[in-house]
Length: 121
Image 1 (cartoon, rainbow, N blue to C red):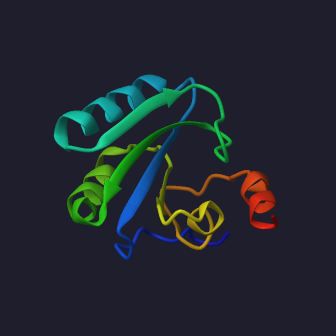
Image 2: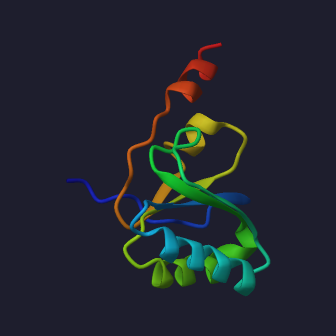
C-alpha cells in the first residue's frame, strides 16, 4: 500500500476534512470543538452522512497558509486514530482533491465523479 502524501504548506488556502463514524462521533465532536476554541478558524458542522466527494462522515475546517505551521502539527497530534484530508482551496475542486490532497492518517476513498463531470464541461 502506498503511503499517503503528508501535508505541505504550498498554497494560500486550505480545507481540512476530519473523518469519523458513529463509534468516533463523540471524539470528533470534542476535537472540532477544541479546534474552534484553540484556533481562530472556521469550523463547519459535523455531517453524519457522506457529503460531496466525502464517502464518510466529516467536519470541514477552513484555514490559510498563515495558520498551517501551528494548526497542522496540533491536528496531527490530537486527531487520535481519525483520518484527515488536507487539501488546497484553489477553486479547482478536482485538482484540489487529487494533486493537492494530503493526509494525516490513512487515506479515505473519495467520490470524485461530480468534479470529473464538471471538468469535462
